[in-house]
Amino acid sequence: MNMKKKILALIMLAMLAACMAIPAFATDYCFTPINQNNVYLNLVGSPGSNMYMRRLSLYRTSVLGEDQRFTRRTINVGGQEATYWMKDNQYAINKSNGSYLEGYVAFMWPVNYAAQEVNNDSLFCAPNTSNPLRLFRHDLGLAYTSSNTGATVYFSETGSSWSYHSL
Image (cartoon, rainbow, N blue to C red; front, side, top):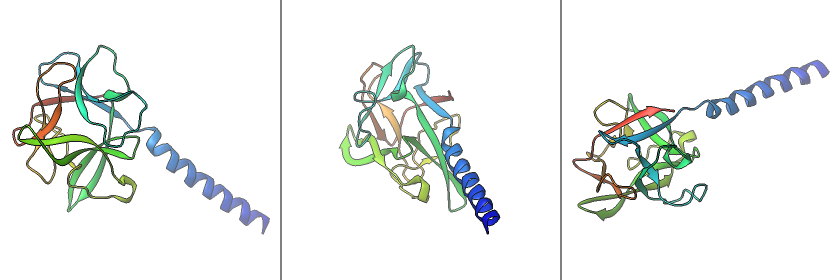
């Protein structure tokens, strides 16, 4: 009986270690408008503040901080790969229903990635070289008002061209 408990404990420990290791090895990405040096997609607000409904902007920096890093999480939707660009494994870039410049406000919204939730306002097409920030179910992409620090980022039909790279 004692040996069975040890084996069970070992199995549970291995499962716990595997579950904890998966998020620890996730790769972060940053996004920059095409042909813009040191200008990045950024979370508005103080680093470390609550992610709930934080808006997106552009930010010029030579040293990336946490507010310019996004984690890629993929799910399968009807046989196609789709992507969430997330922070803290709980919040994803999202399209609001509030209008802005003939488009929609972009901000962070809670998504249950672990349960493979399908949130059409947060789910992006699988990344490609032409535009990694295009929504999966809406014909909208992330756009920006200018390439200056603090420029508002929003969703529009035309979107803007972005490049991305892993960190």
